[in-house]
Image: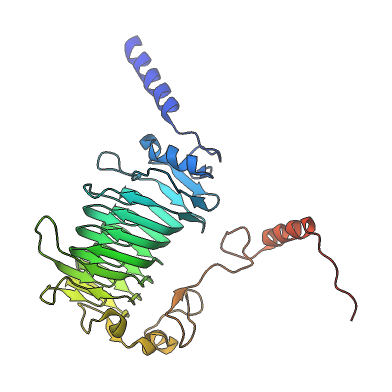
Length: 357
């Protein structure tokens, strides 16, 4: 009995010693998440898989220039925690791992949640299951996440996620700009999408099909999703407005919105036929560029331009509405706390009163 007790104590102490130390503090619980405040904190997160089931919060924009990045979440230890970006960005993400699978800022998610996070000037390169934000997501939710940059792989390649699968998976309010390149199952948002929900998201990325150096056959290339499957899968109120370029005119299953659809429901979604160069898709409705920049196109399909979407009429494609500009504490509402922050900032400024007229 004594031996068992000592073993339990040692294991407990080892767990305490191995937990990461983050400059912003926190204990990794929902009420007191680890706070990522500096590039060094991200390095701690990368190298401390013991923490990958915890809660994290980004406290400001993070620049990862010059840091040798490895994916958070691997085949042996998946990321199962929660990461709140709080609307801040992580910039200069460089992941060049052309011979590896499950490549992304987060490599493999299982039952995880990532929300309110933007990646700027990103580069992710791998082999299979490659995404800008996530290589492979299972039973996980990605909400209000954006990627700007380049993603390269061979199969299961997407701007947000290489693949998103399994019940209770969802991509909500996600957007991509840049370039996504691969051979098969390649999409602006995700390469493979099954038994999940993709809602009010868009891609303005160029999706480029290339030859596989390993000899695989190119197929299933789409502006939003490469291949979607499963009768429980729903893609709704999404659009794609980027070039879709297969490696040859004989490449099968190429579409402006979706390349290949194996039973999924696709509703009230659109793609730009002129920009994409594609007149067909395995789901969705093709429109001209002028129609894609008119609110009536989307309002007639039930899109919410009060709470979710905005558009520069005849000038821009729809974009996801940001938080109110007066939401200074980023809690999603404008209240007295925001006024208090404004007052504090006002008092620190040397502001001259205007002269009388």
